[in-house]
Length: 300
Figure 1 (cartoon, rainbow, N blue to C red):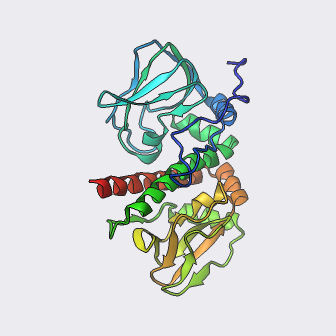
Figure 2 (figure 1 turned 120 degrees about the vertical axis):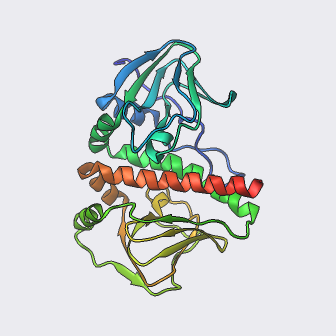
């Protein structure tokens, strides 16, 4: 493993997605950063060709169930299949198995070693340990999810759906975590706005995310509300990883309040409280899954 160096390896193509369906695929995934992260606490495992590493619909309860892992492939390649049909090929330098662990959902595919494989594996304890030492990894994972989300949002806008079942984000950060964040920010006075105020506008460029401390924020795409954010919930996370235009409009449905979190604030908070990073990763993954389900419903 000491001889491995992914610094010259191009970013993994993707399971990530472009900002619009017509743009070239891009990725903010950094193989070298992933290798450094997994080296901090990962354990080496080997799988012979033909061995199933995990199977679709396998339940992962909570953030990492007992025995559940996420993986970085060092050597070989791994096929991901669903109901026997190929989805994609995982190559050295890429991670896999992360969505089920983060999003608290069953495995969405079966992972099988196509060749003899060597991986670095992280369980919950080791993941948290690495995250505290390298909080940048959380931002990288968020960037991967953000690009998936941008593509799905663009497709949803093209579908011109009339109305959808909106997702409600509440207590992404529990009361203690929210209080810890506010202390980390220097206990700023939350910004407030009356009902009907547009907090951010679709297409505008921003550099901070918002954490709601009061009221209820409606998130809409082209006038269609797709989710609500309540106290403890966050929105605008994609601004932490890129400066692309906001993918949705956020409107105060009731009198609302929030605090702003910059990229540096995020990194400092994850370093001191890695559970903060996990909470936001889970919130982002919930958005990815929700918009994906809306797309499937629009296509049905």
